[in-house]
Length: 115
Ligand code: 5GP
Ligand code: ZN
Image (tube, rainbow, N blue to C red; front, side, top):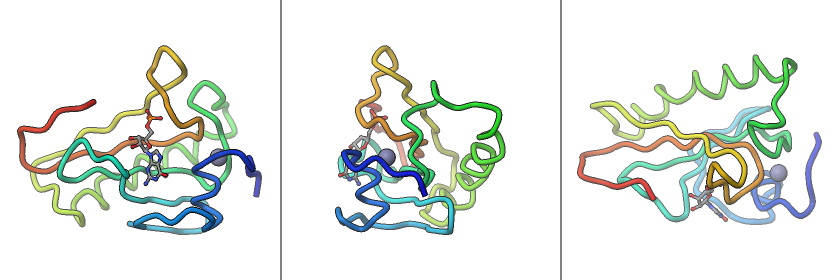
């Protein structure tokens, strides 16, 4: 599987950095955000290192579909009964901090603010 040795999320995939896991299968990993912006805040990532949505091509369509399709199931399991927010920050102008593709899923009783 393609990894970037300097990437913090690749290190989480490899178990070099600990995380609070929500879900894992062969191609995806889901874990709680270390600095949550909402009562429920987890990240859905591919195990494959793709830096951002900018680098996504036709070959990733199905992967992206499976990432997004996982959100409602896991959000419900985490207690999001009244909906949730999904965010994908992309590149410098998108405010992306970690350059390994990830979907933020945030929910829980409001008010809460997105940073
Ligand atoms: P973005 O790149 O979309 O701006 O957000 C990256 C997210 O990753 C941030 O919300 C940040 O709190 C989270 N994050 C950064 N480093 C770690 C880490 O080592 N562990 C976990 N669980 N989350 C992290
Ligand atoms: Zn990575």
